[in-house]
Structure formats: C-alpha cells, structure tokens
Image (cartoon, helix red, strand yellow):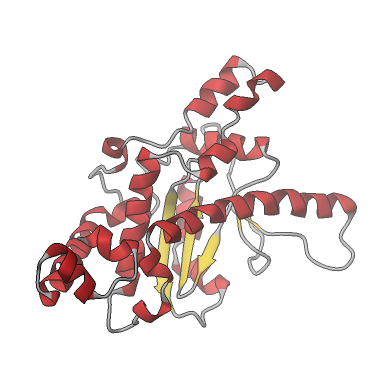
Length: 259
C-alpha cells in the first residue's frame, strides 16, 4: 500500500478503490508503515559505518578515479544534503531544511564535516574527499570546481572531468523520482500538512533496496569489468566486483553507531 502511494500521485480515493479500504484507512496505514520504516532504518541514511569502511571507501575512490574525477555531493529543495556512492546507493541523507538556506548551512548542519573527519580515510590514512558544486568551499574533505575567468586549461579539464561524475551521481535521484512519482508531484508535497521529509527519506531507503536487487545506471557507469580487455589486471577486477551493491540482508542491518 505504501509502495502504491509513493509510486504514483494517486488520489487516496483511487487507492481506496484499488485496495478496497476506506480512504482514512489507506492514509493511516501508509503513514504508519512509512513512520515504522523510517524509525527502524533511518540510521542507514546517516553515514552507515558498518558498510562505509575505510576499505570500501578506498574502492569507491578508485572506481571514481578510473572515470577521471573525485566524488559527489548533491542538493535538493526542500533542500536535502546527500552523498551518492559508486554502487548507486544514497549513502548519506540530511534534511529537509528550509529551501532558503544556503549550501554552507546544509554542509555544517548535516554534521558531515565531523563525520568525514572521523571516517573518510583510506586504510593507509589518506583522507578522502567529496565533491560539491561551486557554492561549496574547499577543505581537506571537500572539493568544488575551479572558478573565475582566468582558470588554466588544466583546471578547465579538471572541472569538465569531475562534472561528468557529478552528473552521473544525479542519476540516482532521477531513478528514485521515476520509481516514486509521488515525490515529483508538487501538489502532493503539502509541507506542514504531510510528513514530506519522512516520505522522501523512506523513498530513499526503498530506492536503496531497489538498487540492491537491480543494478542501477550509476553502478553500470562505474563498472569497469567490461573494460578488462583494455588492460585491467586481476586485482583491479576483484576490486570492481566489490563495488556491487550489498544484498538486502547486508544493507538492512540493525547495528547503529554514533557518528
């Protein structure tokens, strides 16, 4: 019933005809299930340290490097602050917040600076960085494009290369909205009347479940096993296989750690 509610912007009366339940029951059941899912699994959208180990982060970085650029940060309005990893999963999601807030506010309120300081390291102690749009500053864990009218050719090439990966990461959100069309229908997003933020976060969890079952576009883009004839050695192929999304059982775990 919740999936039917999120999949398309149906009227509750349409769903009542489909399921044979009164409208108020449809609303109450879908909202209750939505809240239960969010309460039980929301930790998976808050930098899941069980899955995002230093070894796994290094594999992500190597996969992105082979495509020519570092990795992504994304924003949405109502504004959300997220990280998408090369296995196609939405690995961190903060929000929603007031759309008038700037990106710097989201960056600090999301607690990502502290999280990355604690966890964004390779096994040998090399810091890893995420990539954001030009509104973000640059620091040890955050990159953004070179700006200005006098950037060098190398800087222009770097901007072009990294923007390709940034666009690929946005595919995850396109796929999520295509799967759950309710999120893309403005008239249904009744802020203060509906739990819009919980709807979006639960849709992200369900999207990640879908990723675990069906290989998404993002993973296919970073999957270089098809390029083995071009010179990838056996170790690199093993590393690429490790970029496969986890199973449902591996993803939906109950180990919660404070970050």
